[in-house]
Amino acid sequence: MTAIELVRGDITRESVDAIVNAANSSLLGGGGVDGAIHRRGGPAILEDCRRLRGAHLGKGLPTGRAVATTAGDLDARWVVHTVGPVYSATEDRSGLLASCYRESLRVAGELGARTVAFPAISTGVYGWPMDDGARIAVETVRAADTTVEEVRFVLFDERAYEAFAAQLR
Ligand code: ADP
Image (cartoon, rainbow, N blue to C red; front, top):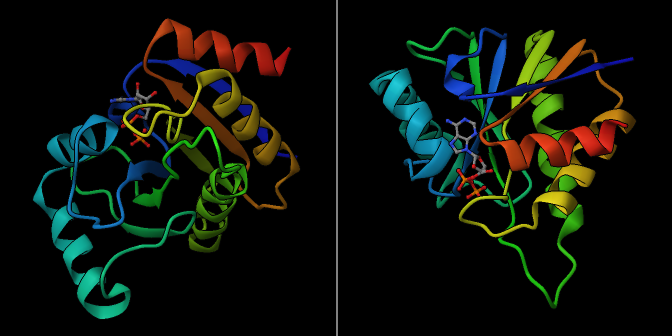
């Protein structure tokens, strides 16, 4: 069974095998956690992203999928980039959000990662309500069939931390 840990803080400061990035489909960087990962991880991550774009991904990574790159200067072996869905009040996209967690664990597990840090995917600019985002994250990781031994949710603020803590209670 995969152990779940909660940390309050900045995911770019974590020491784990794989750090998950809430990327956008271009893989060319953005704001929020994506910007922070590229800033602290340095240019090697973007170089790898460009290579992946050229080699495999054509116009971009589809929502709900995940790919791995180097972690550059971060204290990790890989960054796993996944594209969360933009929240919609009229369309149920929760399957896509669950897919981000599942696919990221699959990609990380296949690389041999045993510890993986996740941010609260889609809960920033993409507008997903934090409580629901936390529920989907925790349920999906709990149900995942994975070789990853520890998942660390790294929550940027107290509200996010509390939302995840409530799901674990
Ligand atoms: P998305 O576009 O998927 O919504 P964001 O980066 O805008 O992605 O936000 C996702 C979550 O990550 C938000 O809850 C935001 O507060 C959080 N976040 C932003 N920066 C960091 C960071 N350095 N470490 C961990 N979480 C972060």
